[in-house]
Image (cartoon, rainbow, N blue to C red; front, side, top):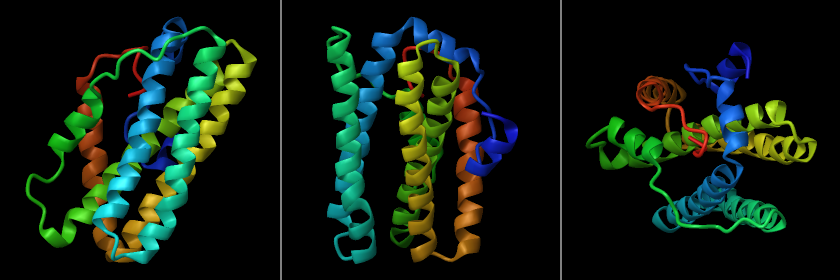
Length: 200
């Protein structure tokens, strides 16, 4: 993804394009990690709906995302089965864990939703960037098209979480806190070694 395209997503650090080559070598591992990422994305949306059931706009916006993310899991699992891959065990997502640690340690009750939405937006943005690399650099044309679909979807989810944040909080506050999350993500990603067996 170019610097200009990264700026659209807000990301401050561009993934080394060679990551896609590492992922191609570890295709079963990257597909496994991707499958579990889609599961966790669906679960996170369900959790938000349950926790903020008194916010009808959020419930209406995220309910179809739950269905979409679970559909993505099924797509990845079908691709794995086609290749004779097993799902294997879920792995810890050190990227997300470190992001959570880098966020506000004790946000006010009023701001908890803001930071949950921005964290989701950030994960979707980084996933979009990684899917873009896979859609451009994998040798197999089928997988390029496969990951292009995910790239488009993640871009929409990123925008949705930002829009929800701006619905419930002043735009200037969202921008300020979003920039803090972007800076934190840059530090987190810089601290992690490049791994072709992980989406993040």
